[in-house]
Every structure is written in C-alpha cells, then in structure tokens.
Length: 328
Image (cartoon, rainbow, N blue to C red; front, side, top):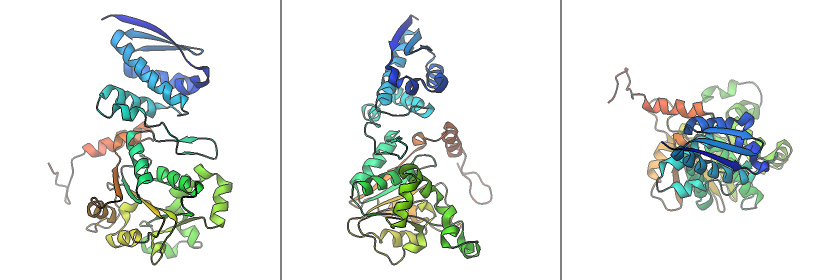
C-alpha cells in the first residue's frame, strides 16, 4: 500500500478551533482515521496510507469550513463529520451544510447553530410550521433549540412574549406540601427551561423580560382556560402529559402564536396503563396540515459521547413485559 506525506497551512485564526485544546481534535481524528497528524504552529503534517490520507483531507476540509463559520469544534463534531463523509449517502451534501446559518448569538457571544442534520430539520420545521412536535432521546437539543428559536422570534418581533411550561409530574399531589411560595415549589421542575434562557439572554435581560411578563414560565396546570395570542409557546417533557392535558394545551393557541412540543417517549413517568399525551398526539396529528413531527435520533445527541453510548445500549436491551419475561 502506497504511503503519502502532505503538509497543510491552516489559517492562524482558526487553529485553536480546528486543532482543539492540547490538539485534542487532531488526536481524535488521527485515532479514527489511522493517519499521523502533527501540528507545528499553523502547519499540519499528515502521514499515512494514500487512501486514508485523502479521506482525512476531506474531513479536515469540512472541519475547516465549520471553524471558519464560527462552529466550536469538539469530539462530537469530529465524529459526526467522519460519519457523514464516510457514509456517502444521498444526504451527504445536505449534512455537510447543516451548520451554515446561526440561529442566535448568546449574551456571551456563543454562536448557536444546528450541529446535526436532525437538528437542522427540527429548526426548519419550527420556522415553517405553527405547531412542531420534537421527539427524541436526552441530549439531542430539543429543549435548548426550541428556546433558542423562541428567543429569536421574540427579538425579531414575530411574537410579543414567550410562554414555557412543563408538567410537574414528579411533584404529583405533594406539591402543596413543599416549602415556599408557588414559584419556589415549581422552580426545580422548570429549571431546564430557565437554564436555557439564562444562557441565551444573560441574567440581566432575562430578569427584565420576566419582570415585564414578556417571558412566562409556569406548570402546565396553569395553562387551563387561557388563550395565548402572539406568543411562542413551548411544552417541554410532554411525554409526561395525559391525553386530556395535551388536548387542553394544544387548544390554548391563539392568533399569531407558534407552539413547540418536546419530549422523549422512552422516559414516560406516568402511572402504568396511562396513555402519554405526546404518544397519542404524534399518532393523531401526523397527517394534519401545518403540523410538523420531527424524530431526533441517537446520532443527534450533542452531549458527552457517553450519553450516545448509553442510549444505544438501552436500545439494544431486550424488551421485557411485566413479570420479567423477555420479548423477542
């Protein structure tokens, strides 16, 4: 097998992004491709079998394009780009451009953009539909991207306010016995939503919007009887809604509003035998015009690589029925 040695000059401005801290990105790529990668300043030396070196050059070119667009590269981006460019399927060109356009810039200057094709389709669905159901495992960015799109819609004056809600299933009937006022009681269940808003808006702007009631965060039960107009409404953890709760929530939509419903149907906390409102809605609404149903997968997980491995391990586990009998 013939051997190649190639030298690449990298734009010094993107070297820290492309190479990674302590050249971690290069080490990840080197291990995956079986090609020696050595960095000296902004010069990169590649050495290995011809075919492997050529494949590595293609991956580096895609990563360089992402870095120049401001994408922060890490192990996930390296693995995902490798997967896209080595599959050679019909979505390859589309996937190469999944991070072309940022949705939002956070208060700290962080660029928020889709990091997988699944995320790109999810964002496009939210942009183009009045109601989007985003279903997928933990770590796929369902909630964070929905909140990002909501903030973008608010700041571009497409809507006048944001309404974010979750079912407080874990609290059950014990909510009234918890210490503190209503807000203090429900804060733990709404924390993922507030965390996303803090990250995107910054503390000062977040507090200003809350004081002026431009942003409202409340348990699902407090949506009953309301009609929400000119609002971007997010229902998170929707797998824990009952059929009645889901129908109640979806019918809150008023003129000029947009709804995003997110959930993971593999983590339903409802009592056994009770139908999940999200599962039912995904079946009932799948053919309704104006409604998008997006399924994110384990390859869309953008948290620590171990999260993806855990999800895949659970998916491989044989399914059991009550009593411990293994199915299939």
